[in-house]
Amino acid sequence: MSGTTGLSPDEESGIRAAAARVPVVRAANFSIGLLALRKAMEAALPGLSDWDLEIVERHHRLKVDAPSGTALELARRAREQRGWGEESLRHGRQGRTGTRPRAEIGLHALRGGSWVGDHAVVLAGPGESVELRHIVQDRAAFAHGVLHATKFVAKAPAGFYTLEDVVTAAHR
Image 1: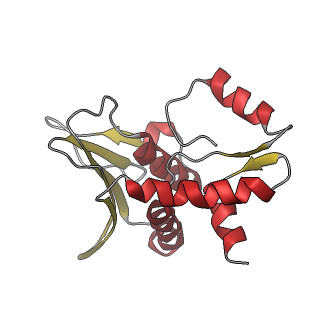
Image 2: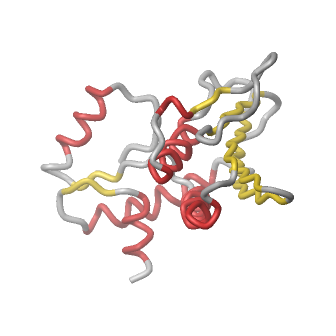
């Protein structure tokens, strides 16, 4: 199992190669609630295709990367669903930026205090907005997903799996 972000292409290839011999569950984040946030975002995007999209994430003051790998994964999925390239990502804003382009996803990283993890997907339309948010209050939240994944790999054949595969199998 691998539940981290920021791996090099060689490390990612090694994980995929191992999946030919053993079951591998790969997730950017093992939180079941984060999976629900992602699925909610993906369900909302088609009906709000002309709405602006911003992702705001908060983590503790000791986190060394920004934006988080989880925020980048949410942005990647939104980009792909909307058919946009990496150039659509806008990391924060400063100065006189001009009007917001339609094909843009804003990414904002806050660091401070002891936030474990907080990710919000904000969809803003004319005269209204929707905010989808997931907050991790305790790192034990990740352990729940890991326990589900552990039970899954104990019975699964060799292959590459996601947390969604694990949750789907648990509800069959």
